[in-house]
Each structure stands twice: as structure tokens, then as C-alpha cells.
Length: 126
Image (cartoon, rainbow, N blue to C red; front, top):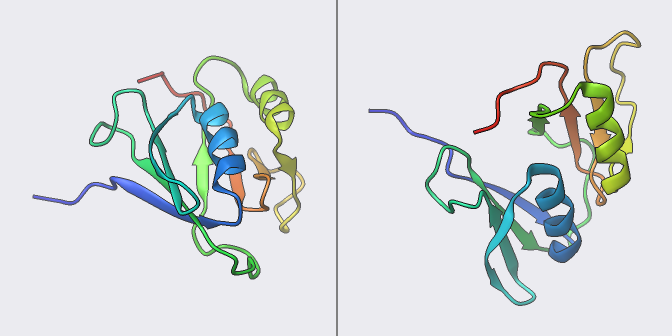
């Protein structure tokens, strides 16, 4: 028997903003909330499916440097360039963290500056 990742927890200043952003990026929906404390978002089938949910917890602590863990995403219905444009339109920003100029991935940041990568390979939708 092994473990599965069921939730990713992300502390943030504004769960509303990040919930909207990540729901747009991942085609997730809001699953649960406690006003002013947290919002849980996830796939339409809810908690316990093949994809983990994201638990956005409100905090006033500042973000300190690069995160030690980040999210990688892959497009499911378009090529990497088209997906990059969609993510930028949703509020992502391109960032330089020292990646090679010829990297096959793009490093981006969500509206609160949390880095994530858009990989080149396309995955089949679930």
C-alpha cells in the first residue's frame, strides 16, 4: 500500500484571488470554504479523485524567497505556446529564476508570486 497526494496546501494573502486564478488554470471548482480562513478548490468530481485538491489558507505572513515546492502544469487541449498565452491572460506572469534560455518549460508566477512551470509535453485530459 502507498500514499497518494490528496491535497496541496498553499498559504496566501488572498484566497479569493488565487482560487479564481487556479480554477481558471486547472478547470477546477470551489469545493469548500470558511469565510476569511480558507477556500478548497478541486476537480468537478470532488475530493478523492485522481487529482489532488488545493487548499488555499489565508495568512498575513510575507512570502520569503522561492518556494521549496512548486506546481508543474501541462496543457491538455492545446500546444504550449497557446497555453502560455491563456495563462498570461488569466493573470500569470513570466519570471526568471535562472532557468536556461533554451529551457523547454516556462517559469511563471501566480497573482501572489508563487512560481509554477508550464511544461512542453501535452497530457490527455482526465
